[in-house]
Image (cartoon, rainbow, N blue to C red):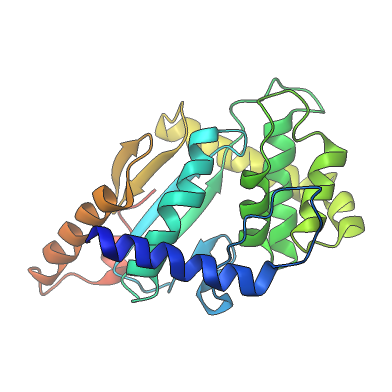
Length: 234
């Protein structure tokens, strides 16, 4: 991946986002001014289900480094690889930075992702939440503010509020956290490229090298299939 390619990819995604999100809200929140084409979205995933390479992303919405991945790295990967059909990105929302209890901000934000997804707006929600972080465990994702951010992203707020208290939302977050424990994840972001664990932020160029290497490996193995590659990921 060239530097020019990365820059062009980011610009493409940002231009698409401006067209879809521009003018939705006033200055109450930071507008991420980005969105992915709807045709690429599949729940909490981006890209074709049969893409030969899968990138798994384990994040916490209170994690500032995760926000950098969302705003700086992922758009370039989407433009370079997802739109080409060679990469699928799958998100998993962990809640490991919160303080526990009913008002745990990591838990609420992760439940919110589940609820936004029930309205087909996971990606929009994630962009807006990451763009509007306000400290860790300092009220940035208290229920009222989180709901307002979700509404700014286009989520219907009444249904969102009801969903936050739903057992299914709680179970989804619990299941993601349990999977994180099983994998030994204790920091975010933690990524997996075709099953290879990467802890911490990597640039789009660095991840691109790993993706390209996996594509070369697959092309050199006539018997390998996209499904076989995907099965090695968490």
